Length: 479
Image 1: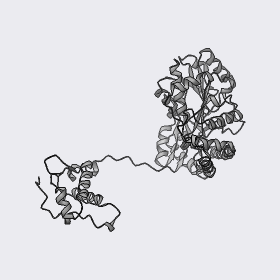
Image 2: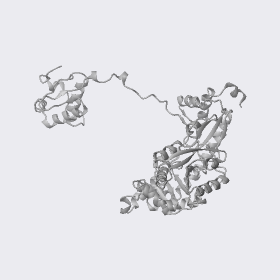
Image 3: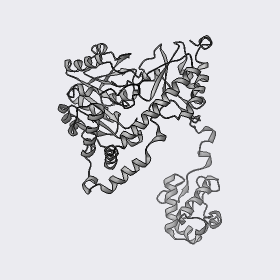
Image 4: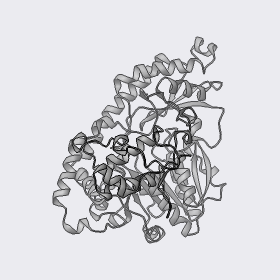
């Protein structure tokens, strides 16, 4: 081990360069020069560097420059200093693992076509009008709007949302019953906390269903009980066999099956909530997009005292906005606030921008244009699947931003997803949304975040992926 390096020509060894060679300050350039000399082995591990005063005199700089550079390298682990001893090099190239041993993230094939569910058409986000709304509220917000925000959300947006839900979704609501939140998942966590505080610790969820809702409920401390869904929606008779006193349901458009809760089961579900002194939590995540009939009104209007209503703009505008709402039964509003004392509403200016966006009719105009675009895209996807994937059966087409592609029971849908991913096509297996695998095979295909021109090549790749997942006999017969 070298005992000292103070006999080196430090001005030659450390090429810190004149100021005009770069914008970095002198102590940064000195630290860089020392670091480089250590990394390339010119300053070996254990070598002593000169005292700060001596090096400053040799380099013709202030002592502060040297002490700052030394301090930086000590913090980075290149140097070590002990009281009464020289500052020494504490790193060598041999102490770093070889590049071949450094774990690397596996290379991922870039996504060329996105047929996974969950996103709207991000290309069609109304940038100009959203920017106009933000600019308007930034200039018009009064000083107290810029203070500490109301955890329940700004009264202006709560009023706007209440009015919007009454006229467009048939909800029975008012400003006081609305809370602004970051989205449906955030809203569910708040509701679960309030229910648990009221002694309700068991929650039923749809099977199959959105896994993030199950995870959100579990994180809030409630026990989750999956309940099967069939062609009429949630099986309420099965629900009655669980200890749950609350249930999350996508009444207008269940995810991922796409079923609509039948009128008989809607009525039965409300009666169940009254019988068990419990609640229905209605996830109204994409009910604005219904193509073959008028949108189905929310269940919340059937019994506002027993139904929570959750919604957001994640599927209509963008999840990046982080804006949603929660409509609570009047009797549960105090419990909801008490159970979430540190809940934070989204930024106030964003809330006011959304209120402006809705009040000026821009939201309705955006939804009308989106419905036309998504209906045309859905039709194109269904037609293309019919010609290129004849062994599949399409379902769940009436609403939303995704469909189900049912396949023969012996299909390897998991393998199809892997094959598609390898060529840049993103898909989802229906089993991804089940708590237990099923013999019924299906893929969940989203058409929100893909352009019309991308659908034919995307479906062609899907067909290629399925050739290894569906028996040849099925492909030949087209059954």
